[in-house]
Image (tube, rainbow, N blue to C red):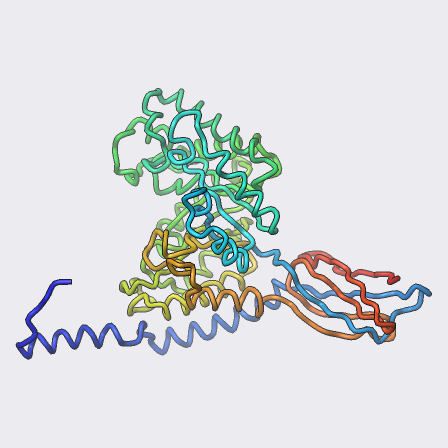
Length: 456
């Protein structure tokens, strides 16, 4: 920080103005904005109860085949069907990972989805030498802890998505190498990774052939390709991935659709083209950090979700991490600075809007710790993995507010009924003789969710 001469009163006044501004509330909220947000949060809460829960009936029968009446039943949800996730890139560093056990402890407390890095230059910096072995122990840890795994990305036609050694090959050869890469990874990780971002940012970057023809051009976002040309290489990649793992859930991933009508429309046109071709696309990815400092309008968020959900595509929020570094809030919805308080409020609002929309099936943070983060201050924990206020808020939402925990008693028919969030449960019956029994159930969407258990 430069030293300044504050002897002059005008300079001092200017300095005080800066200080006072930095201490001012992080946001400027008009009455219309406030009322709109309150209305949409109420609607989100109603939707959460409507779309994220199911009615459950469980009957208990005693060994004498009579209903087990007046027994105390503890209903405890253990997992969520909805995917709350984060990138887990830090753990791939092996011995260079900072405090890995603490990282894992903080991570698994709130997340049931982990995203692994498959950027080609990092995964295979030298041809034939991959990060395969580095991935496996982290994937196994995820499986052991009930964490769904996802790979990102298989194809990204940018400088960051293409290894330098690929420049030694012609266009046709690179396409064959790309096909081999997609097939090898999806088949090789068939029993390890269930979700894939197959193609990254197709409407904002060049097609594969276009990029290879301009290999050394760093302007990856000079896009002039038509939707059919984009669909050609996206369709190929999806079919290769499907061939490699027919059971995998295949996505494409795109940015700026929450704030830019042109991007939203281009993505819609690409999706229509892929549907027309019956491409094996199981869902779509929507990034939520472009423009990077925007506070997204709740109206535009649901407008975007409605559009793509109306096309029949489950929505995955793939990249989200609002900052807390003090940079200005941009966009037309809110103003002020991205403080820790703003990070908390924005995240709570955004997560509720996602969880409160029937089309959204996952939300993924693009960085766990401020130690290693793309946008400064975007982590949920600080550089020493101490929980930030945003982590505390998410923990409460995911593990308390949105997790069912009920004590009840069976009626004369030996039955308990409740409405609970979708996921796995442990149902503990405390019988009148003092013995207990535990029954696992999975409350699922579009299922009857009725069980009859005979106790011993």
